[in-house]
Image (cartoon, rainbow, N blue to C red; front, side, top):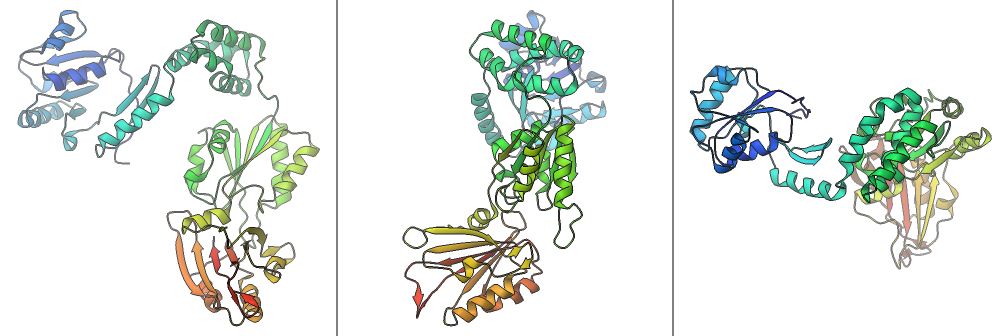
Amino acid sequence: MKTFPMFLQMAGRRVVIVGGGEQAAQKTRLILKTEAAVEIWAPTLDPELSGLADTGRITHRTGPITQDSFSDTALVFIASGCPGIDMALHAVAKAGGATVNVVDQPRLCDAITPSIVDRDPVVVAIGTEGTAPVLARQIKTKLEEALEPRLGDLAAFAGRMRGAAAARLAPRARRDLWRWVFNDAPRQLFTSGAEREAAKLIKTAIETGEFGATKGGSVSLVGAGPGAKDLITLRGVQRLQEADVIYYDRLLDPEILELARRDAERIYVGKAPGCHSWPQEKITQTLVAAAKRGQRVVRLKCGDPGVFGRSTEETDALKASDIPFEIVPGVTAACGAAASIGQSLTERGNIDTLVLTTGHRQDGFSVPDPIKDIKPGTCVALYMAVGAAPRIAAHLETCHPDVPFDVQVVAKAQRKDQIVLNCPLGDLVHTLNVQDIRGEAMLIVRWPFGAQTSNCVSPSVLATV
């Protein structure tokens, strides 16, 4: 980021706007939404600004402008309407130590005015660092539609009740309370205009501590998708924002963790091939222990938790301890890899059966039965198959010596540093070694209907992370 977004305290602080025309009026309208003291420096004012000065909303000054004019200011806006004059005034304001925004001259701006969605006290600021104001306005429009008009009233009421909630409820219960307020009945009532009923409901919940929140700890097994931050589901993001503690895997995009609550504890439990610093049994025991302490736990897994994610071991332990849990599905690696190169896993008339299997079983690498018994119309997706690649290639070459298998290798699929390679089946092992692709890989073997050579069907093979 070239600019850092921040909300400034404005109550009682001095904001100077230089100019008396429409540009100055636009900035004045914006700053009057705050509690700042607004001064307009200009020889004359347009009717709108003049009316504001007459009612005392702003202070109009006409004297000579010097460095002292800009001292002790929170912000200065320069909007004379003349680029040359604006540049000269910018120099004077900077000499006076001010933070300056020169209208329509980004290179002279210490601060850039964002597009704002105002649901006071809920305020959303959208900025593009001056590069795409039209895009900022488009985003603003979508947010205006998404955030109901009375949301600010609900937030303000919640702010007034924070003290009462803090006095009566423990920290975990308070988080559950506000989650309920902003996701359940109180928000629905405010949205429909029933503010009194909502307020009464919230006050009663604080008084009694009863508001339908989950008591004790819970665990969410969340699929993060194949790697990219934006492939996690909305429900997955919500669980991250509710979590007290997050146990995450090795292959995750680190940016996914930025979606979590800032005060959530993050614990790395990644297992690298041949180096299991966190054995599965330890991870499972830790999930149970955290939930028993009353924490809301997220187990963040790559891909989909239910596809070669060892979720059964974790859910069995949670069931045995009577701990509430849920599984939040994610985009599995097979789908992410195929999508990253624009390829479907099934195809009408050619592939009508999809098999997900693994090249790495509990006793080591092997050629799985779906490869040995592959049939026409089948796509076999093999997870964790780099170690098994020599055996798989040898098997296919032996059983189908006349079939010219082609292989696509996709490393780090759906990530910024994704690598896509193409090679014949006979060069698969060499290609993996040369490109230093290890551990987390997938082979997808296709046998389309009608693609036969002698007694064999000509598949294509996709290797991907």
